[in-house]
Image 1 (cartoon, one colour):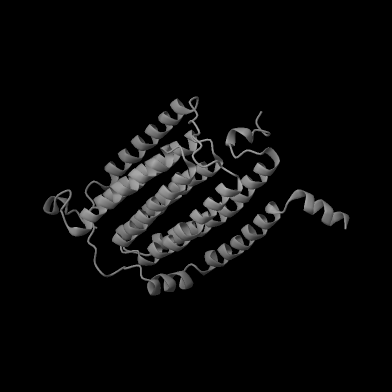
Image 2: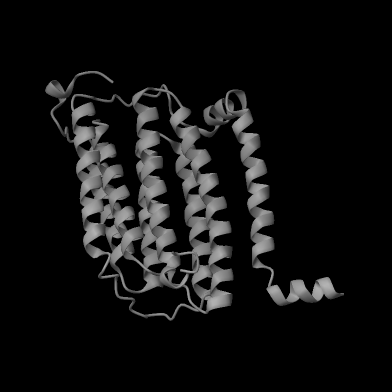
Length: 99
Length: 186
């Protein structure tokens, strides 16, 4: 099996996620695209671990998933707090700290 | 990993590779739909397809534990949380949010640049790599658990503290402001 194919898939998935983060304006869809990018990195980690015949890549991927779960929880509560004060879930409306 | 592309061909049609190509196409297509669909609930449901396909790719890489954790955490928890978030922010179902036209060109430049860089580096580095999938490092729960609790104990414990911090942070953030004020007055 040629491991480079998995890395191609990972790179393309990361690119799709990055384009989504830059393009979409709904904060929750931006979140989904961040998840896509994290998953692409996870796939690369698992592939590298497989190529070098050890389990550390899989452990790192596991840790990434846990951190991503934390990120989703805190991020969603921030989005909902912003929605309560501004009645909008668009990232363009959260521009209070923009200079 | 050895230099055996010449004898195996670039894509030797074993079952695992056919499965990889099919699942990979599904993953890429549904990821594109997550980004491009105008309906946010549909985006969340296409995300389920993407994450499930990635779990299948992990299985093909013999990372069983990671595959099931992916199903449990992402498909089971994260997507449900995202759907709850969509409902709580009262996103109108079927609302078509136009993509940001001002950001379209920079987004295309950044995306194409990232693709070009990543693909060039990957092609350059791993063109001749070939992987034999034996039974030596199958990421079963037993082996992964042993590695986790023998080598990675400290990061594991730090992660548990991080989870606690995220839990407390989410509770603090999601308490409504008025109730916090009245609680202080009482």
